[in-house]
Amino acid sequence: MQYLLSVIHDKAGLATPEEDAAIDVFNDRLQAEGHWVFAGGLASPSTATVIDNRGGEAMVTDGPFLESKEYLAGFWIIEAADLDVALRLATEGSEACNRKVEVRPFL
Image (tube, rainbow, N blue to C red; front, side):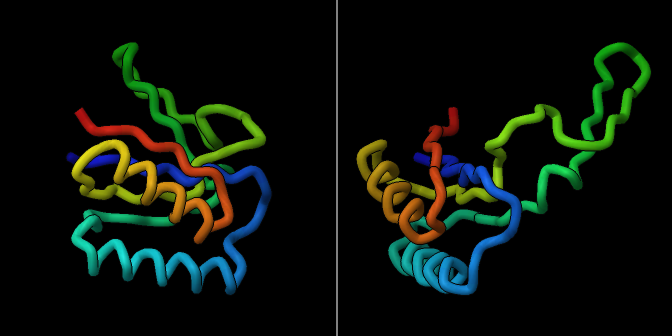
């Protein structure tokens, strides 16, 4: 089963060199153990553009969809046998990146 591990951050700025190193170690382990599908870090919310084309004419807005002190800073998509394994990996990922991690299964 696949899970989305969303990295939630509440401060401006990128990962420290120490956090980057810990994330690299965690990523290597995910790959070695067959859990890795895809991962990525995201630019700050100020770089976002929101497009709403529900009304027949696309409306383009600069900036994040939602103003919030917490934002999506990155993610992992992993393969895990079950939710317990995904939660264990998310716990380790949270420690590696020094941020909150939300776990959600794909349908």
